[in-house]
Image (tube, rainbow, N blue to C red; front, side):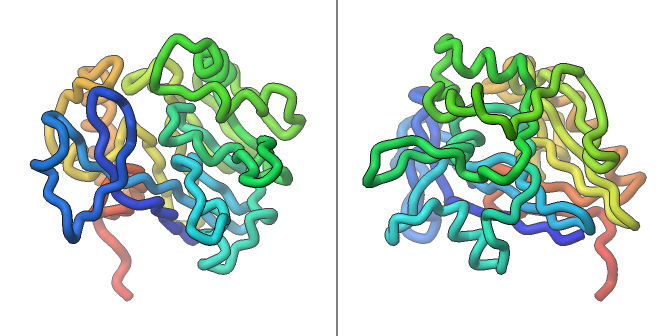
Amino acid sequence: MRIYPLSEGSFTIDQTKVFVPFDTASENLQNRPKGSLLVEIQPFVVVTEQDIILFDTGLGYFNNAGILQLHDQLMQIGIDPSSVTKVFMSHLHKDHAGGLSYLHPIHNERFISFPYAKYYIQKREFALAISGTSPSYLAEQVQLLENFSGVVWLENDEGIIDNLIHYQLTAGHSLYHQVAWIKENDTIFFFGGDEAPQLQQMKSKFVAKYDMDGKKAMEWRQLWWQEGLANNWTYAFYHDIQYPTYQHNPPIK
């Protein structure tokens, strides 16, 4: 199994829920609005013996050459975006679902970003995302999926996809948030999305105000930290600037 973070960069976010690019080398967080959080935005791609799996899709930004940043980063590590076989979504908040589809800069038409992949999405999460009831979602990012034949709608709280991806609904950060594990050979990969966004949150009893149920999210993190310690998981942290991945006992090279 090979695991690659696909960072879109560092950003701050405040009560407006707008993600503003942040240069960690030259900017001071104190100059941003009070209460601003500094986060990385980084989907992950996992290459297994049978699949190329993308976990979440970032903000959906384009680079200076007019290429979807997510596509460009995949190509930089030698992966053709059209070869991605699965896209697993923890949830559909705009900083995770922005790259599900893209607006063509010339034709002004929206396209599926990975048309040859299967998209695995909680059906109840999709309904919430297009309802227009929360500023955390942008319906236009995900609406196209409603009639896309490549979507596999997940309706259970827990299950296994193709005998490979074990998923579980957790409902801490948001109502229909889900996490995932992949076990292959001696590696257990864990993707916690926004339930387990940063290493430091795993190590401490931290209740986040931005979580729907902060206490539940904290309890999940404590449980996963102990389970990961016992089974030497490889964690993937979507919002961690310093530690995109972490393993309690990494193999000696």
